[in-house]
Length: 208
Image (cartoon, rainbow, N blue to C red; front, top):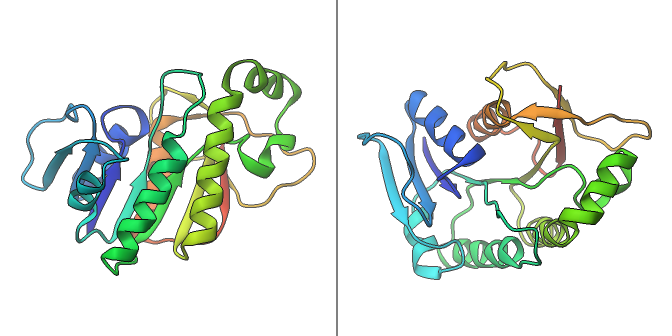
């Protein structure tokens, strides 16, 4: 199938791109930096911005699934997540296309905030409050403006190897524990959902 990965140069985006190619899919990437993977017959790189209309149109053309794995290195206030979500939906409307849209945010975004542990709530408040506020807006924009979406909310990310064994939590329950999970396993889940989406319209927590 044809898959677009927005934000593919590092982290989960890089992992999911590598995995999609291993599985034989045609992959188009959109990122500011060149995706650090060897040349591949089924890999098309678009170097550009997720908030530039022409770059986004070039990247999503013909996609059957779009995986959004954007990230920022700074804890300061940003509108990247929400601005890119609005632009992406605008492009999909203009091109009359409806691929499966799988969007990476994080546990602690939106309504999941109050289900996080006290130490994590303190951590987010001190360091990531502004970033997660915009991720929350990103979720709202996607859920309100599109039909074929999944929001993926992993717990604390690690660099451990893929296990393919993790818990998938599609409901918020008092006392739930969402801890660590590797970027490779998040990529595994997102890839599986791109191929066979079973959590459409759901906010999915991932943890071990």
